Amino acid sequence: MSERKFTGKHAAAVFIGAFGVIIGVNILLAYSAIKTFPGLEVKNSYVASQEFNTRLHAQEALGWSVRADASGGLVTVSITDQAGQPVEVSDLKAVLGRATHVKEDIEPAFTFDGTVYVARAELGDGNWNIRMVARADDGTEFTQRVVLHVKG
Image 1 (cartoon, rainbow, N blue to C red):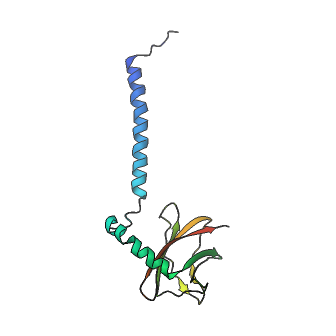
Image 2: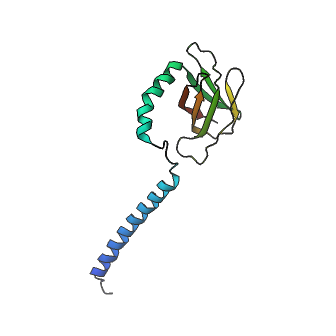
Image 3: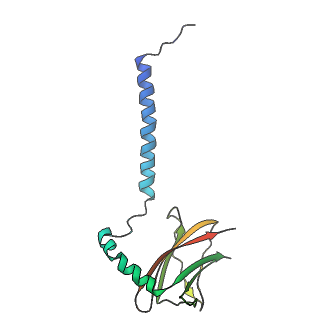
């Protein structure tokens, strides 16, 4: 049996194969990142940054606290004032989704029951986020991301 020699053609094949795998994986990861990117948060980040402190101080002046819970196919969002009393807002919009991706995002229709906001949503176990925007009676916008942990 004769010994095989490692030639320049073999070295080129190994070199091209190794870099081919690296480039292929990079292309796959870049494609996946672009495909799952949900989009821009704001149209103009400079303008948003200039208004941030004003909106923050107005929101903090409301003194609201928010808490979310999920059980039995219902999601509840509790908004309370500084005295711990329930707050009924003039408008509430919320997006409920996983913390890691947007493909399971839903916009539940929350209704106020006199104490908390309630919406029907069947959620799997794990971490969820409620990205909510509530408007006070005076027009002040209250924006918050509420973390929701669901356990089976």
